[in-house]
Image: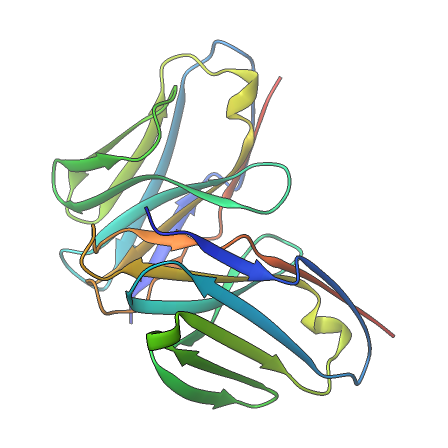
Length: 111
Length: 112
């Protein structure tokens, strides 16, 4: 099945710093989402971005489907950005209803 | 608007006891439904998904089963819990292949 790897696995930032999180996938996808898991475990939808670029406030995301990767940019980080960031994909041409998660990036933003 | 409900929020069960976790979606019809488990650490493992009533796809052979008795209801069950069944269980829904998925609040299960 499709493999979804995220990097870095862990990231520590000072408040106000910028960061880039990466999601690599091993096969073609027709669906890609970014989530933020808060300290209570809730998964918050950040972006639905199977291709192209989107921005929402301090966050933006870019997916280059032909090269099989997606990037999540966090600018001017805040302590509330801490948590785990996941990308999740659906495999084009495979069992297309399966939503497969990446390995996650644990982000800690220090004041 | 659509909402997803998952309960209970936390559960402590003894080894060997049965389990039933319920997930319901409101405000839509014929959703795709998913059960995930997040063990210690942070990976989300897909356990089951369903594209319609009575249609269940199992991803990982294990001590759990799933059922979809109604269009917007998805149930995760076990006849006898194991210690290894402990974890954070999340239910999700989506309307199809090229649509966004949304998650419930999760159930934190501790088997003692």
